[in-house]
Image (cartoon, rainbow, N blue to C red; front, top):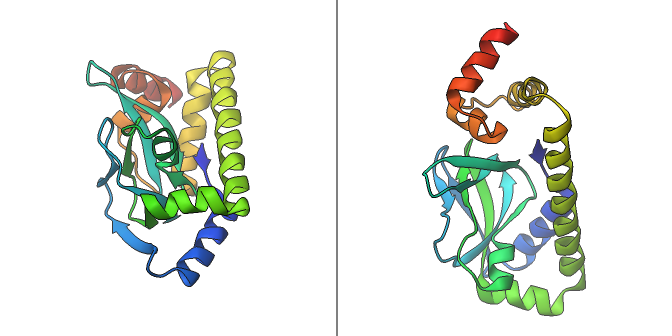
Length: 185
């Protein structure tokens, strides 16, 4: 439910300490947009602390939350590698601090840093595994079971999530969510 990557976080802490001109800290408040779907990207970011939601907004203006990302998760790498606009939106669910670097420094890391490339490949593989696991889980288990996990994550991370966000993560309407919550009580 909440994805983290301690190895990437440790790597970026080292970059920040050794490349103060190339890696900076930036803060985002709860509900602030970090990336906007279909907009150009000018920076690579890695979450130092906090939680964000990564979501698609469909043509009918409905949101679908792909996943929640936490400490050590990288943002914008796919778009920078493919030289495309943001695939999805990323919004702060809590106060968030990120390490931020420009495109030129990111490209130099891709070209020259083997450890960075290994961490990037590991991150890609982990996301593929998580996406396929979540898809199969949603096919095999009830929405009630997924909702229970979501509520447990919310409690353990001490974050408040709107019903709209819970429904968007589960791929259901708020009305359906309300019905399930009523039945669970």
